[in-house]
Amino acid sequence: MLANQWVVLLAFSYVGCLFLIAWWADRHTQRSSLLRALVYSLSLAVYCSSWTFFGAVGQAVNDGWSFVPIYLGPILLFILAWPFIRRLSVVSTRNRVTSIADFIGSRYGKHQFLAALVTFIAVVGSLPYIALQLKAVTQAWLTVQRLWQPSLIENHSSTSFIAALILVVFTVAFGTRVVDKRHRHRGLMAAIAVESVVKLIAFLAVGVFAISLVFGAEAKDLVLDYGQLGGWPEPINFITQLVLAAAAIVCLPRQFHVMVVEHHSRRDMRLARWIFPAYLALFCIMIAPIAVLGQSLLGGGLVAL
Image (cartoon, rainbow, N blue to C red; front, side, top):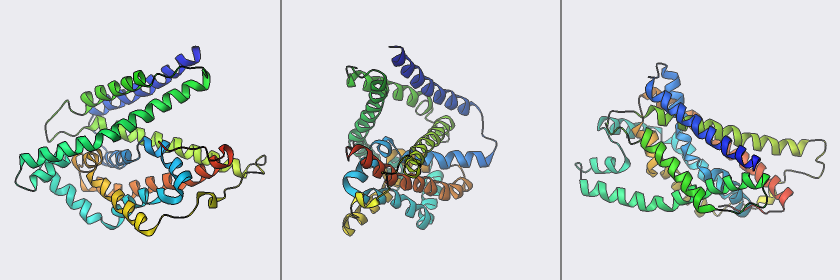
């Protein structure tokens, strides 16, 4: 029971730190333009949701290199279609757009019915995705608990409810509390940026650990045989996933918000053009070693959520 209490304490301490960071950033203006640009660039990594941890490696095991276009699409969009992204941000800032629904409605004379229709489609389309995120949080929580308490009786509903409640409180406190179109959610962006750094460090640590096991003196039977991942997807499937992933950077409500609505200046965009693709590339590079080593150690027992 003591170990279980430590899990609860660590989890709530982490959430509490995010609340404190958001609270502090909301009340202090970022005087450094470089720091603001860095926060903006890292906040774009909200694209790497819990699926990156729980799904990407499992997808690599089950479907080979099909995970590559999911990261390659946004990378190519930021590098090759940069004028489009910059123009999108400038136009949205000029029109004081607050969401993708507002943007589409503004393109047709502030058409309220069209904006409402886009909002409805976004909400309905996001529900399964939100459910998947809550499932990932619940699975992570229960997995950590079972490390110390193997006989734990799983209670998915209460864990998911608590996670959803915390997310609602955070969203109300730092997201929807102020509805002024000129307001920038500095606290929300700072918390997302910090979490992006934590995600990257954690994933890189696992990847480096996997590679170090292979090259360690005691791991003579472990090899990084990327042939275990199978072949590449069919060209039509690869291109389809590539286009969808690139479109997600613009069409996902959360992605549109951090990239367009929270856009402050052109300097932010210039830095993000290179930091965000580099962030995605680091994630993508580490997926294959983790998947291959997982197959070697666990016999291919990895399942994507």
